[in-house]
Each structure stands twice: as structure tokens, then as C-alpha cells.
Length: 290
View 1 (cartoon, rainbow, N blue to C red):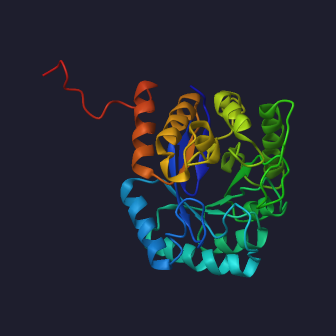
View 2: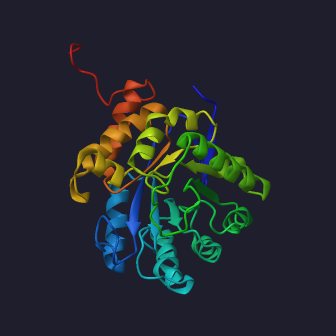
């Protein structure tokens, strides 16, 4: 078992940790829930629901990843900053992540009480990690193949996609540490679908153990992604089973954080893998013993 330890907020975790990060979209046009949590009251209901379901982290985002209407920094702040502050007030011990690539937004949400900056666009704003360092916050480094934020990959090619992921993530993680982010607060994410076609995302999943071996806590964002849909030829609303299969494989390889829409199902899969791996005892053992 690896001696890895990592810190998010005031909490410490180890290599056996398998954490659920629940998605809360403050957008009217998200690809999965179609704006179901756009209204503030609906977003609060979502936070309360996932906390009750056992989510370890909530990841709040103000801009959908796909192309669409341009959202400036001020509008992004309007969508997330006050909401983060309100969530922090109601849930003082909850780990709060914000999905943003902009340093100015990162600063505002950390001032409002967030613990983690989830940079889904691979360092597009190099000052974001400097803001994380200033606030002693955690930061998620991602591999996107250098694509521009909110653009889709077009016939992108890699000699070895996993080698590209490793090179990019190690460079980003090392830079984060060099500017002052504590090593134990740096998380890496291969970013399935981002800068990748389905073959690439499948290959990354198959070889996740190579990323775990790098010694950084590993986040995977698999939930209802296109690589699942294309693998099974299923639309967005019918990808849960495929997502859970990819989740189980990722957990067996040793990933630590799972960014998801469905908390209960994911938690059950992760707990079952933890039992099979010997990291968690069964909840009860009466069969053949009573």
C-alpha cells in the first residue's frame, strides 16, 4: 500500500481513500442536467441532497465545459461566489471545490470559503495556481492536450496519450509546488474527454495505474461522459451503468476522487471495490456464521 497522504481543507486522506465529489452546476445549459440546478434554490436543494447521500466534496461550476454563449469573469463570479459563501455558512465542514480556470474567479471563491480550485482546462490561466498557493488551497491539475477552454478536440492525435498525460500533469503539479502550493494539496486529473477522443479516454482508463504510480492523489471525472456514451452507443441519460463500470475499474487501479452526478450509486461501487481490495470491512457478515 502506498504511503501517499493528501490534504483537502482541514481533512487528511490516504491512499485507501475513495472520495465522492458531487457536481453542482450553476448553469442554465449543462450537458447532463439541462440547467436543473440553475436556480439558487434548486442548487441549494442539490447540495443538501448530496450531503445527505454521503458526498465528501461538492464541485460548483458556473460555466459549462462545452462551447456556448461567452461567459465573462463578472458573470461567472455572480453565478458562484455568493453561492459558495452561502454553502459554506450552512455546511461549515463540507469540502467545497469550484470548477474554474480563471485566477480572478479562483481568488473570489477562496475568499468566500472554497477549499479546492478545480482547473478543468490544464493551466490556461497560469496565475490560478499562484492564487491557490496564496490561500493554502488545494488545486486540481488536468490534462487537456493544450486545447482552448470550451472547445472540442478535433482529430487530436498522440503518439502515446498516457505519456502525454503524464508529462503534462507532472509539469503542472511541479509548477504548483514551485509557486507555493503544498505538495499534499495538489491533485491530478487525466480529464477524460477533454482534448481526447473515445479511444484516448479508454486507453487512459485502462492504464490509470501508471498515473496512480506518480504519487499524487488522482481525480477522475467519468460521469456520463461521451467516451461512455460512444462505447455503448447510448445517449447522455442512459450512461449510468457504463459510468459505474469505468468507476469500478478506476477504483481498482487506485484513483482517489470521483467527480459524479449520481452519488449513491457511485458510493456503493467504491465501497464494494474497497471491500474487495481489503481496504474496508463488509458492513455486516452473517452468512454462514449465524
